[in-house]
Image 1 (cartoon, rainbow, N blue to C red):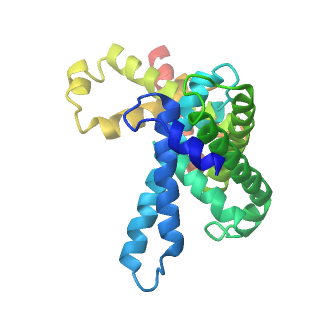
Image 2: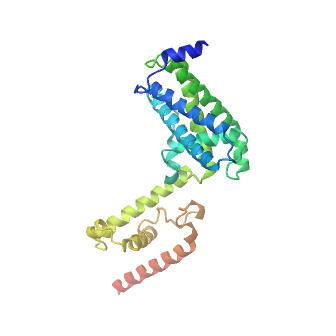
Image 3: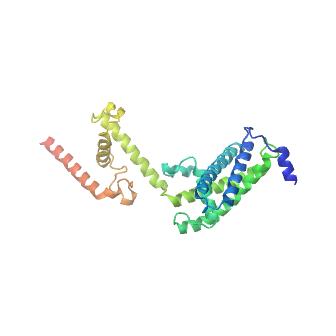
Length: 284
């Protein structure tokens, strides 16, 4: 009874721009959609069910986005590190990833198996359960504070937010790593080596007149073939200690060139043979 009275008396205005007020109404909307989804028989009205699931995911995105903003203000120096995100494929790093992670955590916590990955799902399930419990603690603490004082972040709030942030970062890395190939630090370094090789190749090609700046500025279609071919020759002959170093183990090469290791050896041999022949001609 007291909670209902306090909610009626201290409920923030919908137009209030403060983060706790925004969270309060975003969380209310999420609860309403969840309640309707729970009461709906999806077999009788599949179209409505699909619409509500989409709306539910959108509400989750919104709630997490506001929680993230609150953490930036409330615990800016205590945020969990997320340097690992640079290793995620580009198509994974989008705005609604957090909502997908929340949805995935709830599915795992409920006993589901994610995309036929049974072993990974079993390994992540304890973390998913802990994360969903922590998220409920965060939502409860923020709702409670929104009905007390919109301008104050209590130590209790900070504590539950820190715990949640650490768990969410840990789950994010585990979940995405299970769903898609994530580059190791070594693979990421090798990828950077290839990028540098292509940049150095373009600079050399400009210096030697093989390419012109106009060709690059105009996105000349032929460059899609010219630059990779020049980079391969350059990597084999000029920068032989770089990413195309054929003296390395095959598994240490970039996955871009790994399937062509034998062919690259033949190209290097022919190129070096041709260079040696030219030098001998000059001497004679």
